[in-house]
Length: 82
Image (tube, rainbow, N blue to C red):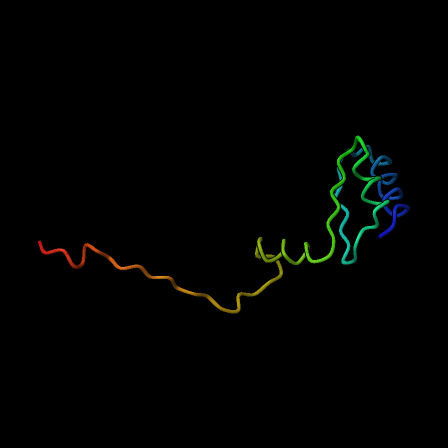
């Protein structure tokens, strides 16, 4: 994703009097796009690459559990005589 797309996004946000935004892409951001977003007074979060899928997994959104594991520990009270 290149700087012009981020600039358009910022312009659209300002048109709605918004000062914060999240821009999500499955590709990567160019160095110029990142530098532009970092230099803004407004808060623009750039999410790219694998991050969307990592967030989906963390939040349980649009994913189905495939396996679960149970971890056990020894209960020492079981072995103590009363």
